[in-house]
Length: 612
Image (tube, rainbow, N blue to C red; front, side, top):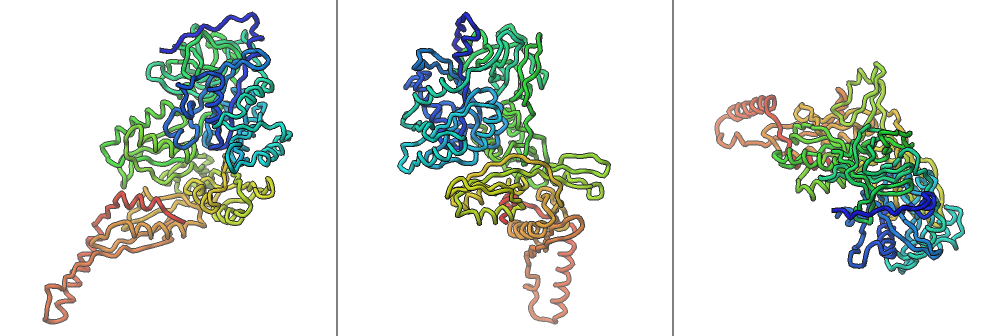
């Protein structure tokens, strides 16, 4: 049962706004964002020592293990500053991975300021810059903070110089702290109070509240995390979502302390939650505007529906688990509106689902949650991307699996998604990175030196080339020193073809792929070799072919299991032996015509691990 707090009546609503500070923390993965949030909660007395644990705001086990915030969260702190005033401070903890860039942008729009946390030993990295640009686009006041100054290999002065050059700030003004040891936390809070502007908003105007995240509760339905921009929301307000049109009456209104604590109302400038009673997060999407149904105002700018970028098929290892897999995906979708799935059937793997993800990290998270939280053994096929096919009648259709690719006679062109990528690396790895990106059809844009040793390389490259193992290869050629950031650029026309795999003359849809024509021979040849190793031998010879349209580009042959038919034929004329061999040959030819080749699941999985 949530605690009930009565909102104190204040003589002037504007005076109340003057003592509110809404801010977030942005950083590259593992630069100490969650640890700093812990220290702020501890220093302001929001949580007692007994209630504290590491990474308080990261509620999922996967978040703790990977050191990455996956879901946004918020917490209200009360801080008595050196000027004698008590301030209400709302910290909005943003997701930490590039796959969730849209969620980060919405959370930033709910704030007026941002703490930019940079590791004193690592310096500026890819997502530091990406998130900084998002903060500047949202017109936030950025306070740079150098963290982990207690580490033996920390170089705070050099990193402060880097950050100062980036922001046009004096390095001497940049805060130096250790979140782990609690050094400099008071200075951070004082800087927020002095420099972050108070929220603007009119409590008497019609309601406009930005939904920056949501989660599903079995008893209260969808709980929307909101920043009230104008107006106020209380238990009597009938609500309408601007983008989806869903309407509801609040079941509970409250704030995060960090546990959910009920209050009478939320006013302009405040951050809290509204329990809507809606049955799916699809009706209450991130970035949408919550309005008063009786006095609808204009929706806030910046909303866009989440768009899956990477697609893969998920099959249960055991066919009888199919209903359990469907239920698990439906439950995950209750909390994650960006997850999409449709039923699919494969000759090799049976019944499963075609699932859309925001990116590879999102896909990894969903796979781990299916295995851990729902105890399912699943097989995930090689990921693919969503292409656009332009037909002869002018229609443009989406294609996310090779089986849906239209016939070449109806096709004008195929377009594929390209990404803008930034790679931060020590200068000695420039050569291997250039070779890797060029091999993946990347196009160089620019190269900038951050300092004497570190470089940022900017490229454009197809998403299809990134999603298989590009990040692993990048880490391998740079010994783990490079960091990568990417964002969608545009769809570009390319010479793309469907590569079919034929086993014993029968096409196998599960192994077909869409590739660039220049790579068709190399990919087809590698795939045919891999299948030859993986499938068991039959009593007849099995041809394995890779084809583009009607043209075979590669072939391998799995030899037959031979039976010694001459074992019983000892002595006598040679024609007796020849007669037996001809009889065997005829039998094998007939068997090849009617025989079918079973592709074991192990063989299918081996093919997915196709190396270049």
